Amino acid sequence: MTGDPVRLSVSGLCVSYGKVEIVHDVSFTLSAGKVTGLIGPNGAGKTTLIDAVTGFTPASAGQIVLDGTVLNSMPPHERFRRGLTRTFQSLELFEDLSVAENLAVAGPEPAVALGLGMLADQLPATLSHDERLAVGLGRALAAGGQVLLVDEPAAGLDSAARATLTTRLRRLAERGYAILLVDHDIKLVFEACDDVVVLGAGRVVAYGPPATVRDRPEVREVYLGGSPATAVRVPTQPSKHKVLALEGVTSGYDRLPVMHEVTLDVHAGEIVALLGPNGAGKTTLIRSVSGQLTPFDGRVSVLGHPARRPSPARLARRGLAVSPQGGTPLRGLTVRQILRLAVGRRPGGQIERTLASFPALRPLLDRTGGELSGGERQQVALASAVARQPKLLIVDEFSSGLAPDLASSLLAVLRRLADERGTGILLIEQHVSLALAAADRAYILDRGRIVFTGTAATLAADPGLINASYFGIGSASD
Image (cartoon, rainbow, N blue to C red):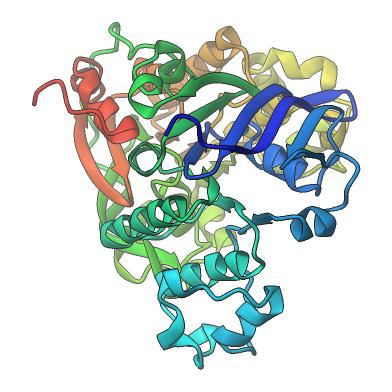
């Protein structure tokens, strides 16, 4: 739709927290009648960007213009009144108000396009997830604004509900709305949007029509870490001893399944890579294994024990360690204290042995977790997990914030841990090439379901399998 009027213009936007710049020189426009997508891996700056546009975070530079009015100095409620509306991923509805009352709180405009009339007298607790999402959208529309920022609307939706969401957004665009769609589901964004903005490390990596954007090598590199590795190891002969087994596991939050009938196992002494786009269900799987979530159905066995409502502490005593994404949460303790906690009553010298594998932490021993960079906190999390000498180690996005050379050296530490100590390792990693270089086997999780199971070498040899899961591009074998 050439010639559609620009409703929102963002130019040269920068956002900093202290000395750290999260968003740098980002520019894009939202036009009436168009849906524009905003995508990027975890940590790319998407949430910070939306918060800056809607006034919840101050911009350090740049300009935000809505229908000719500069918004930079306006608070969120004033931007809302002028027509800039937003939905939130958490869908925080007023649970004690009916659907009609939820809409009336926002404004008098009807939301007939979303088919909410039949639900007017119902309470949110009685609605399906898809219906709750429609109420969230309807509340934004009821305010009467013509620029709509939609944050992660596809989370937890099945294929049919995703198709319904795409139809809703396209119909709203046809009615003249200017829409920004932010979602982890890259395939949905490519299907629903006229243009796509790709963020990487706070910068615009690509901007244009979906068919053009998804074929650009820099977009692939932002998500996958470059071309899939070709020099992958010959997989080890797996031990007969399974340290982790999932059989037909369905799990999620409240009544909403996120992962469906997942079967996966890890043997002692092997590294298994779990790959998949953001929002595929990887974090839900970790929580289901580590005792933070109770699966709806299926069986989970950790270190030979059926995990029926296990506590994380009991699993840790049995030999499970988790290195979480985002690094150590112990911000008030020094690195030395964190490692001492991890070692516990194990024989002396374990801290020194750990530091031999993580030499970059030695000069940081007297710094607290809160004084470390994101990459340093990630190293501390991995080091403290390794120091526990686990039998099963789950590593979640360990390369986040790390230079490639350092990430490769730490991957070698994990390989030695598997080879020399027989530790089974489940490696959840965004950078596919990095994970495949060290793994014996791999799984791809896509929209909550396992879509590939095989050796890392097989997956590395067919990049089309990865493209199909991450970007919706057909497999090379098609």
